[in-house]
Length: 580
Ligand SMILES: Cc1cc2nc3c(=O)[nH]c(=O)nc-3n(C[C@H](O)[C@H](O)[C@H](O)COP(=O)(O)OP(=O)(O)OC[C@H]3O[C@@H](n4cnc5c(N)ncnc54)[C@H](O)[C@@H]3O)c2cc1C
Image (tube, rainbow, N blue to C red):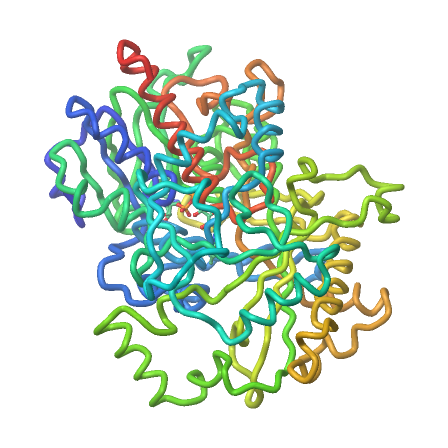
């Protein structure tokens, strides 16, 4: 059941307490409550996702954040690599977490990404081959909303309908689709067509797959906590409740045991405690999880002391090692009346589209704004590799990504129709952190993603912009693309492109690694390969923060995959006789 008020909870004692009802947390809550003997409480800072239109209509993904009630509304620290700019850093604050406010793109990552996780953690269970059952447990492949013929747009060999979260191709064609695909035929060496970037090989250009169920967003709230599951008697979900700390009952012991969770429904004025008898699962995401650890005295003791927080366990990697995907939104004026702007500049048409979605769940609003993605590699002989090692996981991972949209993304300029190619550093070398400045857990953390602080990343984004220009110089775009929009118009020489990159780059919202998994016994990292927090008992982490390197992919599917395996690891510890 779902509870709004702490005082309505039938008990304050549960087997497992899951902190954060987001992407990873709701997977664990679902899988653990498959066992009638396990009681689970999920604590979520945000409110219900029910009826929140901006989080239901797939096309509205970009307006679900930033600056909305469903976003934590964080801002980064001033970024040296971005000429001192601080940028918005959205994180979902609503049941479903970031899976309720993201852009719905479904990409698993590459074989090399997972094989690197396995090597790095010393646990073969994280390898590409080993995680396949967890992809199946998560994915429910679904027909697109318009029921169109999907032959040639994906490879059915790599999909299945046995899982919980719906995934489909976009259910509405965009007017640029033909041109995008034709360009792969005109420039096959640089932009090869990839029938399915979820096959283990991400490289190439293909059709977007997205977490959409017949025209509606499929989030961890609508899927893992959907009607089939939410009424389980052993599952309780408490909304509008922020966890401030986890508390140990024997902090002087060599191995402190953390089983109490401190929480508040009024920003810290009133504090309550709930208790787990088996484990606390931290699933508060790449910002929330390390921040809860630090507020609990688990982190770099010197830094905790500066913030006035008494240290319980010196674990210096907490909050460090963040890798995120920097994004640059590049737009061009185009000669078309068939872009997003047609409706965005016409209130009547906009209303009709919403009406159509409302009545039949068809039309332009059933699709995410991105119709194609390309994951691409720098040439082997790129000059940067003389000075920097290749940070990608291997040949099936990309160095950079391009995301195609049939219009402008963001506040609309007064005139014109647009084409947008977002360029992304898919395998960045820069690293950032989540830090603590205050002993009040309800104050925001200090988020420093360190964008473009390594020269390799600047080079790669520069080459990505040049690649986008080459893409649009191909024949299919002749007569369609008119001219670059904004500062892109003046970005011609390498130096000018680099200046444009520093002045305009922000994030595509994929931070990972702030509670990184490392080998058992390693003297760095935050969790072991079974995702238990090093040096304590009672705490496990199940969210994107454990992923040691950002994959060559958008990060929701990897988070689901990690959480599905994590659920089996937890069951293996508490139900060993079931042989999971
Ligand atoms: C705007 C945006 C667009 C994105 N687009 C895409 C995309 O198109 N495709 C894709 O694959 N990925 C995308 N991502 C990334 C992807 O959604 C995330 O990587 C993934 O959802 C992270 O899952 P998580 O479980 O780690 O965290 P989350 O899903 O963010 O869950 C964390 C939960 O914990 C709660 N929480 C945090 N702190 C506390 C606390 N102290 N007390 C109680 N609750 C707390 C939060 O409110 C939240 O519900 C996007 C992300 C954003 C923000």
